[in-house]
Length: 146
Image 1 (cartoon, helix red, strand yellow):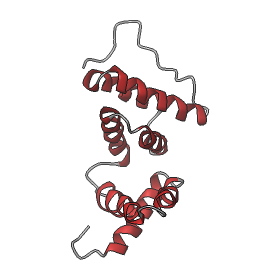
Image 2 (image 1 turned 180 degrees about the horizontal axis):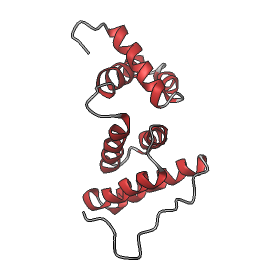
Image 3 (image 1 turned 45 degrees about the vertical axis):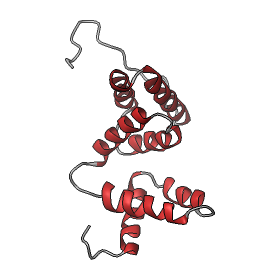
Image 4 (image 1 turned 30 degrees about the vertical axis):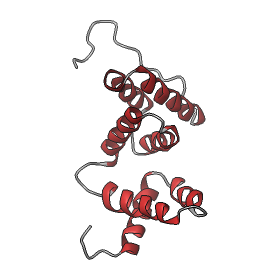
């Protein structure tokens, strides 16, 4: 976005981007903040999606992998993680890929946080009728290297 982009233009761009990856969430976020901090809602949409998420250097699928890893590592972000697991599915990640990303995080941020994230993923997958997730490690020793 250019420096001359107005506040309202960034917000409208953010709504457009957010609507393209998770149409149910935008208005819900704005409504949840309307009576305490409408400015926070504006910034989530205008800055988070209008400025950052809309950048072309990463495709939405890759942005969601990064986001899942960061929210898992932070811990205590289960509500946001739930939204982003839905979004990850919306932008083309499979349940197997999401579960694998969360498994990968265990080595870097610990089992408790990875397990909490996996519980959120299980909830989302159940809501969407995506359980059981059918990934099993290969039995012939051809698992990929780290």
